[in-house]
Image (cartoon, rainbow, N blue to C red):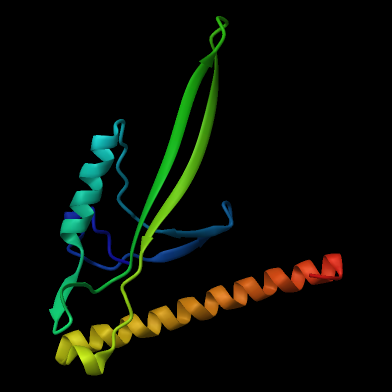
Length: 149
């Protein structure tokens, strides 16, 4: 995992860890930015886009060479009534841009671009298998609980 928002990281890979507390994965030392306005969020998005890894080949002059995830945590506070009580609502949304699969014979990729293309294809295959396995376990659980589809 490379942090696209932290230029001081020298594009050094960050570790992905498991958190027992939150029961989920997280990226260690990932740079976060607090945004008050939509324009702030758009500036962060533009910075990440500038730092993405792109390349060119015979089918695409501006080909993404990596997968990108932007996670936005949203907090909304609203005062309810005259007594000063605030209601807080929170949400999280993940925007994911997957590098497209590469048809290496058609792109005539060589060297580093060919190696990147093979890595992109492998990662998409693994993601597909993970999604299939995850959905299969959901269907299996439903059938065990309910008995029919």
